[in-house]
Length: 154
Length: 112
Image 1 (cartoon, each protein chain N blue to C red):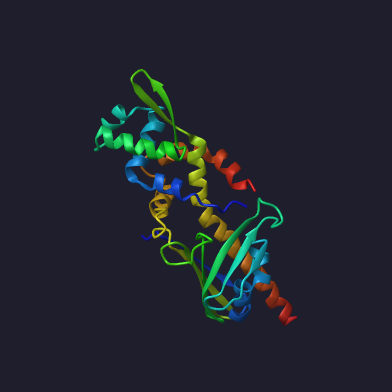
Image 2: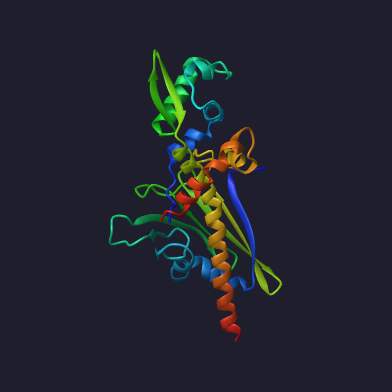
């Protein structure tokens, strides 16, 4: 099993054209992810997505680089890299949406890769977390309340 | 919304020996580099280096105990590491559900 990436599939009862708009245009992105998004959905374009009130120091402004924009088949971008650097396979996470026609709708395939390359070893961690093996399970239940609180903290 | 990932924290718990050390410290309620090295296939010096990594990211607390240094796990910080990891996948699940909802609403509007 490969734990260096997150992979998901979801069926959407909408055409690939509609789904492509939702995943790639800033006005739609704002509805399902960041509070603000500024980028052109074209290959190589750089922009930002931001979380929180951008007029306050608490806001998080995150750079994003569009890698592929192939409507209505694929949209991919890199994020989670230092804002002073250009996005590369070594310093960022790559999010890819693949859209496959399925009946009257679309099979939306999502992947996020680059965890290993960033040196996070999320792979190993996730495996541990999921399987609850070799002792992790004995304290995880005790941590549930902490985790709930931490995850729900804005 | 929490999306900031602490690279150093993740790297610290990414090492298998350090995870076993955390397990042992949790099971025993604490330990020293001597007690840990007795139960791990690494030297006391190596254990001390790993403990320093865990200490730097706040995953363990140190208290002097005679000539030794007694280490214990900071469970809140460990929970934070686990929460960050599990939230990466879970938050994408939530985002994908929102994408589905939005796209299907647009589709219904176009058809009506």
